[in-house]
Image 1 (cartoon, rainbow over the protein chains, first blue to last red):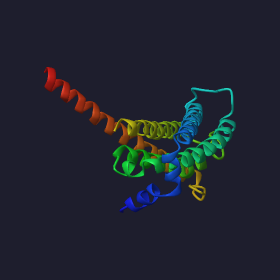
Image 2 (tube, rainbow over the protein chains, first blue to last red):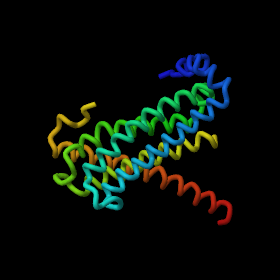
Image 3 (cartoon, chains in turn cyan, brown):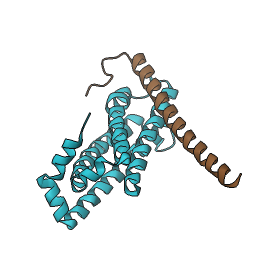
Image 4 (cartoon, rainbow over the protein chains, first blue to last red):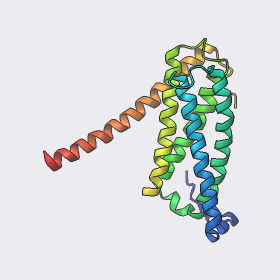
Length: 158
Length: 47
């Protein structure tokens, strides 16, 4: 599917006009993006390491899941909004960057895994679940989000 | 999003475990190939 027209539209949008003209605003939004990534990564780590019984073992799993779910949702919203703003400044360049597409694929996979697999599975706690299923889900989740972070960093190198 | 909410608990577990294995195996295969490429390069350079 040809998606170039979306990037061409973004490149000529008012948002792109602002992001290209005001470096200070871009830097501030980039800060929000990085803090959101740190929040997302941190909450994913806390959530998955708890499922692996490596962290916060004295806190019940449902309590950790409820708290991290709230912060992950906030981080996902802010990371997406600040990401679109940043992308508008270099839209055409990003379209031709394979690391960007790897990151987007990973991000989509991470969202699907969270909303379709992980959270529905853990909604009623982990007591009735096979411990190996819980461990596999935690490792798969860490794998996906690590890949998103790594490919995101790689955009800057390519 | 309802995700797997309509499924039985056992069905949810099987799907989650299966998908997780596929993701981990795919990731492991990719990195094994990358390591293999680096080893091959080192062998060409120093072997």
